[in-house]
Image (cartoon, rainbow, N blue to C red; front, side):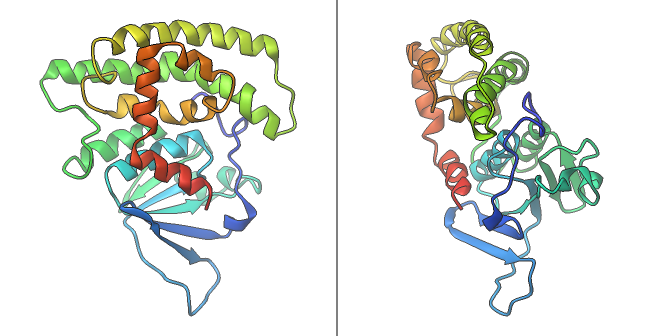
Length: 261
């Protein structure tokens, strides 16, 4: 799921969406439809093969939603009532026994762990939408795997904890720890220095095309760009240019719009 787990992220659900399932056609959020759990003759019910169990504010769920939108796939978002502890109870535990979000169903297949889900989406639907995995030789694939690991092992542990301090603690009425912020920013600076060097050699992290290695960064970057930690990215020209490119993608705009539904 990532460095920020359910107990620490704002994996809550707005009362206005608490009792509904959402259907999305990735081509446009204007095709947004609601399938209410309450019976209604006016309800529009459309069955989607792909079902995502999660909430749009969750960084891990955002990662999966971004991949689905990039692939222009129709999917159903089924909110998980975190406040009621639904993620720690059946039937959700049958989808993810660790009680974390998101989980994905695609026909008779069920998956959890957001990065594993995006990898599945990229490979299973390789002919749709954006490739998300740079086509090429084994060396290119190996390089992509390196930067996928860098995001998960070097970037996200620091960036997600920093977002928790900078953003989510305030949401929960908690006090930000300045010492923790300073330490985490120091660690993230070192990572971003390496990114700056890498991005001077290629347009994106893995190669010259947008891949999962870039996409996986989006949720944490999104939250940090609204804080003073934005300076860490802006002060590095290549990193700043990269951030602007990946956050300006139409698919990512749809993920952000979804949070406002």
